[in-house]
Length: 195
Image (cartoon, rainbow, N blue to C red; front, side):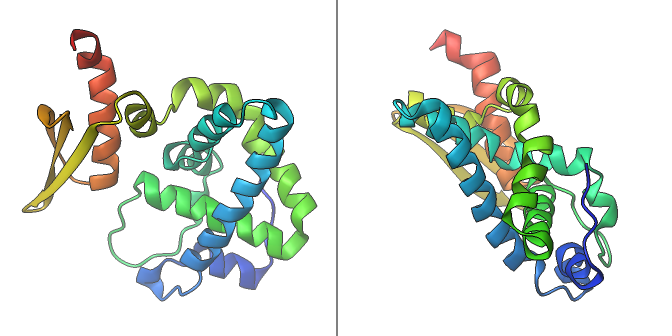
């Protein structure tokens, strides 16, 4: 369920900085806060006696991976106005979705935005929770002495995972944010049970 934005708002939402866009990141910043407000009020209704669980669930639903999935599902990436090569990372796709949410808010108000989020985000809650657990947050919760170290080597990043100052795992990745997610995911899928 996409919402049609007015011409000026649409340009501000989808014009990337590579094409002279000055508003996309500002809109994304506001959109992030609006998504957070929506999720907090929904989760408070369910978990008012367990706010810690509400916070964990909110971090998964509002994660870059979850929002990038929805952005891609709505084909918002196809509307991006850019120049040259752009890496459609989780971060960029989530930024587009957050900016789009801000655009809906500016053009139509909070009620329309919340109805939109109900249909595209909340309706996929179970799917997102089961498929996009934020492994980085989970790692921090379950292993408070864990640390992810990032070192730029040429055009890639060496990403190392330490627990109690012991090197557990290393990977190379072209994107540091996606790499942090991948190393935490790899830890849970391949290594955790052997520790």
